[in-house]
Length: 189
Image (cartoon, rainbow, N blue to C red):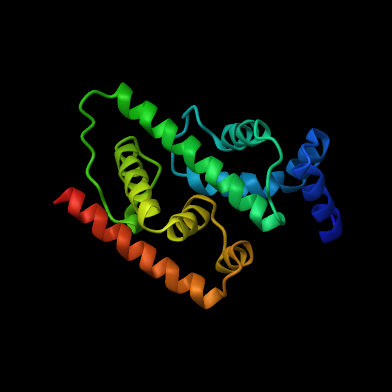
């Protein structure tokens, strides 16, 4: 297990554009990213083309193309990777929806969204649309949902990444969930 000082140094080196440092950093957090990816994908049917390893590798490719990832610490790097995973999963759902003529999904509350079944691709797209709208209202709340829902970060990790207290993060999570629920209900109704 690498020390905090080693991880911090790798992050510094990564910010200067060192591909070697980025690769070493990614190797350090690879198992954690697999856990995050598995949580997001565990309910897809067997045989899906997007699997845990594929999602982590796609996130790597998305992140490695960015020059100088601006992560302050391990939790922040995981948050950035979470965001990359969000876009990959949403793009995957869009592609699946395009292939199915007349998929006609219905928006559902955030708590009920499961990325598993084919019919849930529309739910994920509705969530993404609601998140885009939330981002126009509050970038902070949008990032919080990405970190928590797509990245599986704990309240403590989100507090570390954002520099806010855990109670504030919990309050913001409640506000964001309520906002998304209301927005998705309006789309449904």
